[in-house]
Image (tube, rainbow, N blue to C red; front, side, top):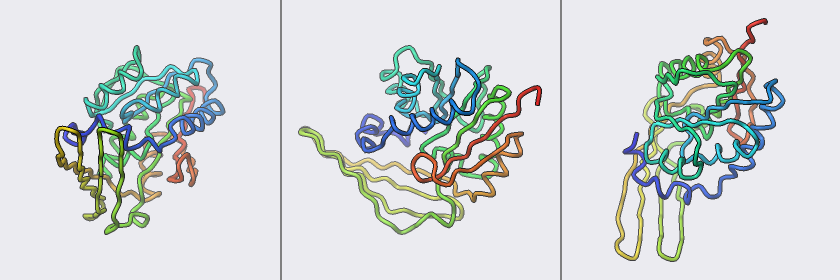
Length: 240
């Protein structure tokens, strides 16, 4: 996964348009309405540079993060000193503790790629939830919603740094493919980097089935926090 993030130090610049504060606030509101606890323990899976965690902490939650990319986690630790961050794969992790809330946002669930990976990730997440706990998953595109053969560009312009990131969306079966071409210009050089990201395309029924098979009660909000939807999953309390 580290090869996906050769450009980790530019990640936040490229996504500075993203309203992490507003998204974390919306998630926090859901949590406070669902979880009957003053001391909420939260695990943010595929936490990236820890931007959501920054605002979860400000909302009073005890938050930890997990990601497969070591370079992104290094940035997350700098942003959130004293916060615990784990290096782990969402399809096969064991942190030896349980949480009252688990989040998997920014469509990171797509990185499981396959239905078997999706089911494994759902199983791991459910196993790490306390009874009565809450799992919130923001999905990637469905097969019908994905639009291959479209061109996308992001631009960063700073006095001594220019970045153009461009890709043409592709598809191979049920996998969406993003070959991200970076042209990075500094006073010393201009160089090219390439990252390939592969994300599975799952239908709503496939997502629901994977989550319900691991003993979760699931509701789907078609809008969610960014317009991509949100799966709101509850684990039954012990006395249910």
